[in-house]
View 1 (cartoon, rainbow, N blue to C red):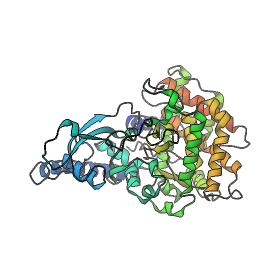
View 2: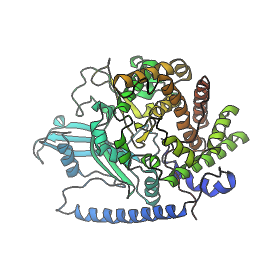
View 3: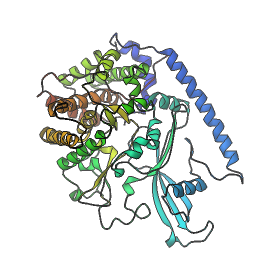
View 4: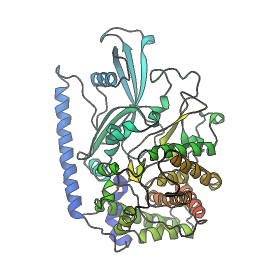
Length: 503
């Protein structure tokens, strides 16, 4: 949700960081050697990509060309390559020929990283070149997600590790994850951390059950964004959505939590995760990648200081409570790599494979097969990581769920999550009690949002109503946690963010 923010504000906040905010002495600001190395890597990667573009244009514009996979910066998709790829992945019959692929912008997409394109594929059955009436044309709806092209974009992707989503889709983790409906079907996935780029071609989950993507949905309802179920509290629900067909908010929350339990149980305290260096946070568990973490913390601290000052001066119409300010200030003042390491090496705190950006806007309620027992599909795995499991759940409650709903129902939903973990054999009640799980949820949700809020409160063109909404959500969640004694918050998980001013 906030990964691309570095492109717009990192230069400003780091040039001002030494004069606008005093960091804790435990935060090391300067890592110039690391930054110079990554900058050189990005420059070499961009030079390579430029040469590749010219090479590809020459080779595949000739009669020798059989089509090529899209690369960052491409505005079209090679039809021969698309045909071969869709046939190889059994998306279309072997006798099919793609006759067109129309690329359009993704309406309503508020993601802040990469380029998202909706691809409308038309194909016919039969030999290439055979004429076909329009009524014989079949359709397939795809999403093309790829990184932007350019030196600064590649530098940002290298620092933030954005290629990990493509790596995830190609990994055994994704192939083994159940249920299979949990992920979008991916037809092509390329990710290079060294080049700072990724390309993913996948199904458009919102079109499941439509002609060409799957069989007719037999009268079932179409897929719907899960954030509409919760009221899409900032932007509202489009008139095209029949709200009478949506499940209740508490039922939806229960399904999300039980689904998360099934996902988390598959790799609960799984030591194999520590060997996957491309997964976010693995380096932190091994005591490396300190510079990226500290850059990110400093980016958040400076952004929070500026956002707080704008609100105090009246420049930005947001009201912060004293309690909220105290929690935020204390978290940044006490942030340190050493404290993070103490947390990560605490064997009483579980870890598992987590989505990393688990909120309703990244979920689809798939009603194409059953309107009464719909599946939950989750996309945008760009922050997939190894982390404390309940952090995912706290994030989505603060992000999406109305305050009265989570005040009344969060504990019930968490108990269903915990019971499902027990049922699946991931935990033993004697080793991981419900009260431990509940406190982890309360702490992790706030910790996930402290850094995120710090970035958003000073994010360019972010409306005051959005910042006020997240402030109010966080404050209510903090007050919910007040019912428990000795719940404290630190800076732990962050999006690998902005480079420092290394000049």
